[in-house]
Amino acid sequence: QKLPDFHGLRDFYHLIKFVKRRLESGDSFADALQNGVARNFAGLTEEDTQNMISRFCGRVNVGASQSVLDLICNNIKDLDARHLMIITSNNVALDILLSQKIVTLENTDILLGSDFSGDRTEVYICQNIMRIKDCMEVGRSIILLNLDNLYESLYDMLNQHYTVRGTKKFCTVAIGANKA
Image 1 (tube, helix red, strand yellow):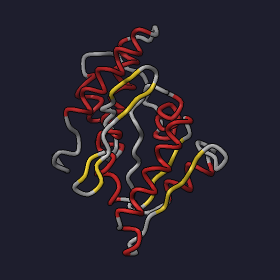
Image 2: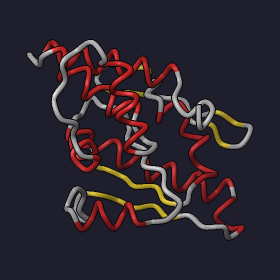
Image 3: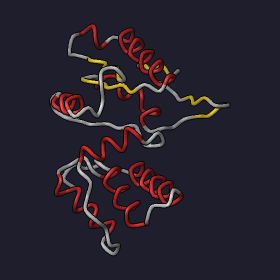
């Protein structure tokens, strides 16, 4: 692997869930598998993504691949999809999402962090977690930028380790050494 542990068991698990959902909705196995591999095992280069699709779909007749923007759009529209993480070294992805109207400022909150010491405190992390919780409760999209100190706190949410009670979903949120 070029990047050790870039893909893991959760990617394979979500691939199986995705293919099952798509087959139940009437998609062909080839389309479900190709789209599932692209949505769950992409993230590196286009060549690496095509190699991954070839590995999974080698014996299945698949059509043309979707573009990265199409995969992102489909993921955002799919209410049962994994939480989408677009990892870049700069903020150009946000510009592309906004300019292509994949997300709009009217339906999306943007949380921005920095390297300032005040953005590394537990109070700041708690404030951001509350904003994320509020957005999730009303089904609003949220974009997290430069909040590396927050992602570990959201591990269970990002991996969809939810407990369902009635119609509500709950998950563990860790702040520092504390879990809530």
